Image (tube, rainbow, N blue to C red):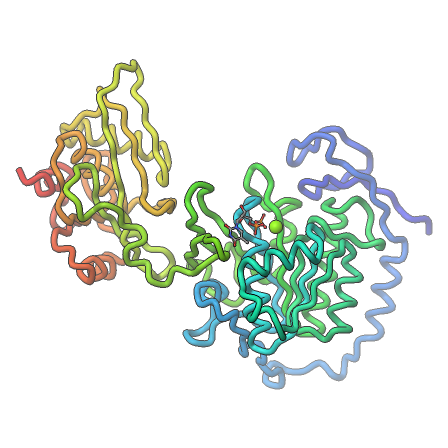
Length: 449
Ligand code: TYD
Ligand code: MG
């Protein structure tokens, strides 16, 4: 049988029997690429099937759940996101983890730090980079670790874009962890297309998954994201791996949040909080003062809220600045909260709180560079803006409630836990749905009318 030719969209994986300029599935232009399907696909499946020893299929009782012995990265914020029971968090043997994030956010840095930490526990690590030379990786390593720490470590560095070579090296060096930086730069001669194209991505990922599952050696690989913020190449990769991690943060601030978008072995709601420093990413386990700015000082325009990041309540300061504006459409600038949420809250504040920002430029900022998506911060945003417009300082005030379009406030999940956290830090003025069922009441309490 002759080999079959098909055309595959590099962006979404859509297949077609002829070349198309515009992909009907994802609307990207010039993304179709010719691919040759191996003509022995049916044959190999058939011959493999006969090889399976049907007699030896184990029952569920016979299968040992060895996967519970996790390998700690010794970075507790990272382990937390990987999942597992407390004190036993970390990487599951044979786990395949995709780490994605914007360029320059710190993916290579954190991967190298993990390689160093794991090697420091006496394990062997292979770090393969298709982007940097061995000496460039060494320079980075010298930045994040001291010379003494780097000596006597079993970390092998390989600058290569050949996935087959990378896997062969991992096998021959008998490593305990394999890291690939990045999946878009590696390729195999056995697959079609250029590095980063869909056939290559699919082949290389499958190769890594097969390697991990057959040897129980965990594999991390970095995946770039596109301008639109999705994992480049496709969602397809996310389906193939056990865990998808996403490192995010603001460029200007050093705060980095590690989330898991998918985790076969853990809870996807947990996050890790880091800060990018001179010596790489440092974990912030003590979040106490990090997201609180000037709240202690007597300046109007500040209110504290408590958001849940995973299972952790975080105290975060919301700052608002309002200045008289001559513009027909005054400026609304929001950092850390969605623009639309700010517009909506300003409308509610004007209609139901009788505090109008029509003549003011309004700037709202979340301290510490965190992005708040929870509506539990609504009330704090309203109070911070009102405080700025009225010029009244809110003294050590915490507000936790969603604000509805009718000016009502709503309770939020984990309220008790949040209020307890505020109490821990000595906040006594705590305004929730219980104290103020509607916005006007909350304003009266906060502004001490
Ligand atoms: P990098 O890990 O190369 O990002 P990615 O792999 O996600 O593209 O991080 C690059 C940025 O991190 C760069 O702007 C410099 C900064 N950085 C530090 O601030 N401190 C450090 O110790 C290191 C290694 C990098
Ligand atoms: Mg990188």
